[in-house]
Amino acid sequence: MEIKLFNTMSKSIEIFKPLEEGKVSMYTCGPTVYHFAHIGNLRTYVSQDVMKRMFIANGYDVKHIMNFTDVGHLTSDGDTGEDKMEKGSRREGKSVWEIAKYYTDVFLSDIKKLNILPATKYTPATQYIQEQIDLVKRLEDLGYTYKIEGDGIYYDTSKFADYWKLGGQKLDDLKAGARIDFADGKRNIADFALWKFSPKDVKRQMEWDSPWGVGFPGWHIECSAMSLKEIGDRMDIHSGGVDHIKVHHSNEIAQVEPVIGHKWVNYWVHMEFLNDLTGKMSKSKGDFLTLSKLEDLGYPAIVYRYFLLMASYRKQITFSYELLDGAKNSYENLVKKVNVISKEADRNFNKSVVENWKTKILETLNNDINTAGAIVILQELLKSNETASTKAELIKFFDEILGLNLIENAKALEKSNFSDIPEEITKMAQERLEAKKNKNYALADELRTKISDAGYIIEDKPDRFNIKAK
Ligand code: AMP
Ligand code: ZN
Image 1: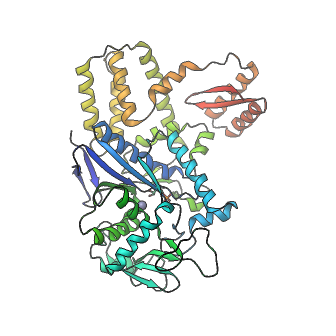
Image 2: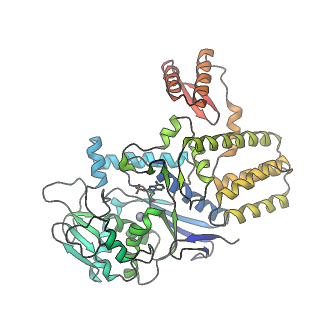
Image 3: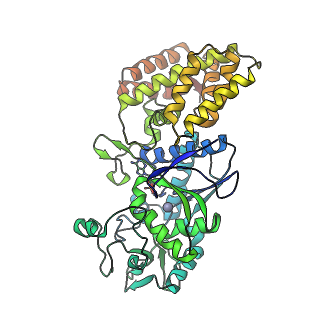
């Protein structure tokens, strides 16, 4: 069946044609592991996950590589400022390696909670230093680089005529706006660091020898070097948040295409932002929303996933608790309906009816990852006159493509069993659920602490809770 995707390069919806029949190669830019991912970052990974599930549901074998940026991402896009990893290390009084390990683990646990399928391989940048040095060397040999004394090796964007093809910016507009910090010695406004020298007076925790002196790779070279190594010199899809279009991904193309001598990526797929009410959500603002904060407020991770899938990945979302509450109610209703259906269903579903629905679902989803449209069909199915068994079989399919864990959560509705829990604890837990519904989070927190002090743990589930002795 046909799959359509919006390609940032052509700025149009295109029919997907794989490089190799039945296979998709995909590289997605991963997190900078110096801090928690905020719920905006996580939106990008959820969007990429349904894209991947869409290909799998269409019978493709997907090879997916995701990097962890654990070195070289500076606090400014203009190649100045501190390495974010060193910043995290100072903030927490731990080594950069400990910081990278800790935030990588939290990230992996967050994406698991969001039911994001694991990548085929995760590639931390510090494990590919030689590949990055080799690529810079190739660019140097081809005449694309220059050195800024005491600073680093830079890419000369004036040498690559196609530099602006992805972002579509006009050089004159950029010069007029000149928003990018212009490091001393840069020849052109868009030039960027390939290799940075370690400062003379400061000992960096992460640094390596190179043909140009001790230092560390620039942020952009890692994705190019790692995807060339892991995927090869052609790939189907390269994806990231929309902020990557004009700088990071434009730089990546400039680093790769002169070396390989042909087109590198067939589809550039960019995921829109989740903003907060004050505008862009960003880690540098300090107080940003994480998945665990949402969970503490009584919103299970899967509800956040459902909230995201109700919109197109190409539309911005402005986050609000009202919208999230709406998603929570809607998700809980779905789970209750699935619970009733699962009890009535047996294995005797009508095969051709199921196949017809599946075709309709995929035709919708395949139209540029239309998750909102797929959810509408799910609602239609639940309201329809189909038998419980047919519905149950199709809900399984929905779980595969949308990853909403409907069946598992519907089963969990059955399991709440408070028989060995003292009555006063159950009562407090019920009061807490009420308090959360009324958004009295202070009271809810107080009750959670009391319950915990008495030796019990509350696990929040959609619309209910479990209590366990510690
Ligand atoms: P970072 O950890 O900052 O390197 O970002 C990880 C991913 O999140 C990248 O693909 C970014 O493009 C994406 N991203 C950053 N901010 C947001 C946001 N507010 N909403 C959605 N995606 C974002
Ligand atoms: Zn990248």
